Length: 291
Image (cartoon, rainbow, N blue to C red; front, top):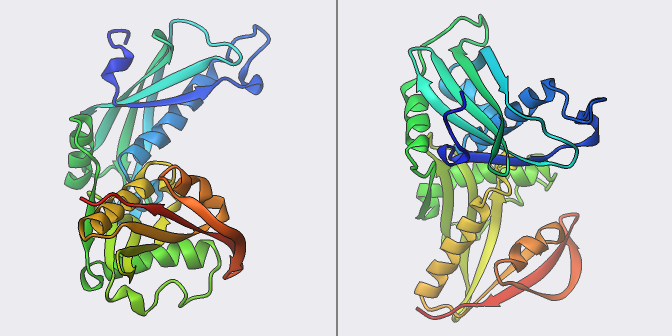
């Protein structure tokens, strides 16, 4: 299993070797390499835009490790930055074979092969890999984007947008039920980032605040997909739509914990932070270029 390089992997996850992972030989204790691969495997599902906890209820089964094989070609040491690549190599009737490579720079330290079986969680008996999952894995490895951005009105987007807001604003942040939606939803333009199973992963809305003035509100990203760029995609689509209709300025209310996210999109704070729904917020704004 040494006939591949890091360029063979679409998914590469980087991590740093920690003190607790080093043995008396001052190298990484060998079982930890499997933990590294398992950690990267979680990121593989994130890259597929699939919250892993949705797999059983969506696909009617779960993945179970049947076999794992590692080959060691070199040792990692404390503070090494390691890149772990994961690749779906083969899909059978009920099994999937994944290859893994652990690299320090361009040096291949460990190779691995993991065989997963798709099975019924209740009985752990194998089932055929669903066509939807098969297509997801094949298209991802072929370089296809695992998600798409959809734009539309409340009638079309409302059910999924509201479910995601409920999950983020009410269930997670504890905002009172009913504050996650209002009358402005009906006239707003809504954006949704959806995976290829139809799950809404990120949302936001664009409303007309005044002449040439737009407001972006109700931006939410499901917890397991944060820091993946989905929130940025929602913002960019909504700002593009605002510019196309002639708006020259866009404003928003940011939770103080998200101020850095909006600052990286060009927004500047206006005034002092204030509490709303029990959470500190700050007003922010940026100019838009006319198209």
